[in-house]
Length: 283
Image (tube, helix red, strand yellow):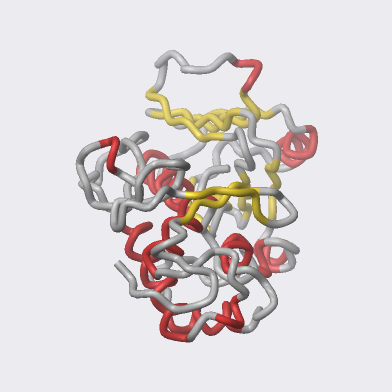
């Protein structure tokens, strides 16, 4: 499933390409969207803005209509210039929004809904989102306090709950726990407030670093591999994620991994830098 940095970059790219432009054509394979388009056509509306909220993308149109989408595991948004060949087959298209210069295509997206401002405020998932790690107003101490309100959850599980804090996924879960020296299987209640704040500070730092890489105001659809170590070497880009059995970049111990939580997402950690029962220094 794409993480919050991917969704943020997607929304930013869609905004740069579409915002302020008139929709010239709308296509969809979702009957519910097609009915709305039939009653109140998208063509002729202006794309006012595109933004992300955690792992959701909101595309706002003139007339008070918002398209809400979630990529889940396999969905993606692509931007093409008018007349450019799509990288995927039309049978994978779920939504296509065309303007004079660009067409935005949602491939294999499973959740796509039209909303008014009122219905969006009532949306069960969106209305319950925790603070977005990439939001300008994000406060690491406040986010840490929200984590602390869930003492019985394992730290790794808590970080994936979008109602606690929005945007993090499986990669960042493992990486920020390593950065804070916290074993991801420890109960949140056993982790001190300073380390919880360190976790959220690391989350903010890592995710910002992965959305700020020199795109300027350009329409960028790919920015390379996600990095948390700061290394330019693609083989050294992550601390622990995906490195089972490999030496820890900090102490040399073999990285461990196992499934965690009801969704059985694989978690990675260093048994030496992230002991199960005591605090350890952050990197």
